[in-house]
Image (tube, rainbow, N blue to C red; front, side):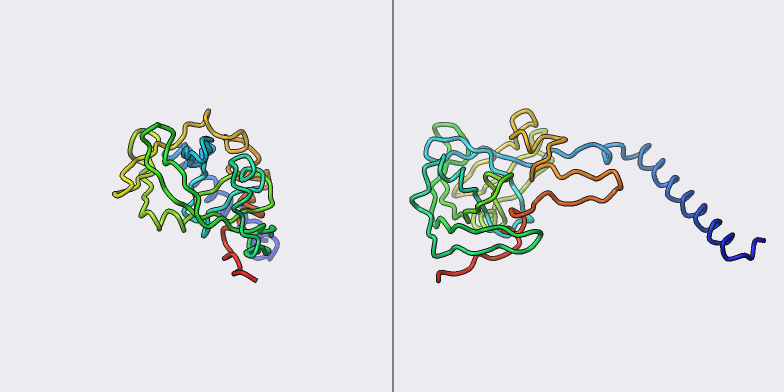
Length: 212
């Protein structure tokens, strides 16, 4: 009976599935790259002689660094714990404090220019170092994905440097295609995509509290 509600629901489901299948076929034919893993954007910055891969995230409100990375880079003594708190957003995480002024080189070469950046220090795993919108705005940086093959992060004068985004083999293991860390969010088999930010995304989404 074509007028039976169950039959009409079945017909509607078949029509909807046919539209979905047609959309999938068109995407596979014209935009197959949409089904490949996306390599996240990282650049090399140098702090206290240590080369660090910084995740460039213009969607993150603040630049963050993990406690472990701050220790490795010799910055622990600069953490202002008066700015400690809890970041809330996509998940939650503990803010240990803030480092107000960190001299770092934009790149790894001996003549690389220096930047002075500010960092929120997080007690969390999966994201050692993130360069967020606060520092990108401070230095009027721009992301150019069409330059140099893999794209560049461009700092205009007075910094005046272009940093090539790192190729996949130079990324932290968790950030490579198929990685499970912050830099490589995965799509679940059921089709639900979740950002891999966790505590790091929470810090990026929430402003660090002021001094107590």
